[in-house]
Amino acid sequence: MRSMELARAAFKAVRDCARLKAGENVLVVADSIVDRALVDAFANAACALGGETQVMIFETRPEINREPPKAVAAALAAADLVLDLIQQYIIHTSAYWRARDGGTRILCGTGITEDMLIRLVGDVDYDELVRVGDRLVAIFSAGTECRVETGDGDVLTMTLTGRPQVLRDGLLEGPGDLDYMPGAQLSSAPIEESINGTITVDGSAYPPVGAVGEAIRVTYREGRVVAVEGGPAGARWYEWLAHFNDPKMFCVAHISVGMNPAARLTGNILEDERLVGCFVLGHGSQMPHFKGKLGRASSHTDLVAVRPRILVDGQVVAEAGQFRV
Image (cartoon, rainbow, N blue to C red; front, side, top):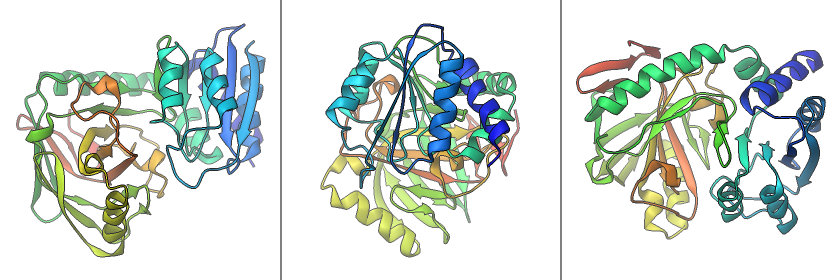
C-alpha cells in the first residue's frame, strides 16, 4: 500500500474537492466491501482539516440503489458534508435525495480504489480539468445536435437544445451539491424523443457487466432501447434491464463525455466513464438537475463507448480518445 500517496490524495480530495470548512459535521460512509485503509484515509483527512468526523460502515447490499439502513439515512441527512465511498452505490435512493434537499453536500467516490484516488485525484491538475470542462460546456450549450460515430459506421444522433449542461468537475460548490471523485465529466439529458440510431459499446456496461469484452451494439428509437446485439455481455445487460419490468429502464437518462487524462479502461465504471473523449449513455433513473422528462426509475445503468467520434453541429469535439477543441 502506498500509504503516503494515499494520505496526500485523500487530503487533497477533502480540502480542495469537498472544500471542508473547520467545524462542519462530516460523515464518511462506506459498505463493508470497501478497503478500511481508504475509509481511514478520508476520515483522517477530514479530522485533520477540522471536521467533526464520523464513520459509518454497513453490510454490502446485493444490488445498487437499495435504500441504506435507517441509521445511515438519518446520518446522511444530519451531515453538512458526506464523503461517500459506498461501492454498491445509493445515488438514486430516496435517502440520498432527501439529504441533498436538506442541504447536505456529497462528494461521491462510489467504487473508488486507493490506486484510482492516487492517480485520478492526487496526480491530476484539477484546474486544467475545469478549463477543459468550461470549453466543452460552451460548445454543448450553444449546440443543437450531437452526433456520435462508433464501430463500423454506427451513428447515434440527438438534440441538445433547451437542456442544461452539467460539468462534473469533482468540486463541491454549496449546500445540496453533489459531485464525484474522480472528476471529470460533462453531462446532460438530450431531448428524449430525439435520440435515434445505433452505438457500438466497447468499454463498459455497468451494472451488471463491467468491461464488455466483445463489443455490443445498442439501437435506440426515440430515446428507448429497441435492440441489443453482441455476445454474452449484451444479453446479460438486456436481461438485467428487463428483469425490473420497468419501461423506464430502457430509456436514456443522460449522456456524458469523459475528461480525466489519467483514466484508463479497467472495468470499474467510475474510471471507465471518465476516459478522455469517451461517450456515456445512462439509462433508468434521472437526476432532477438534468431537467428531463424521465425522473425516477427502478435503477440505473451506464454504457461506455471508449474512442468515438463526437460532433456538435458538425464540429468534431472528440475523436480517438482526444479532444479536438
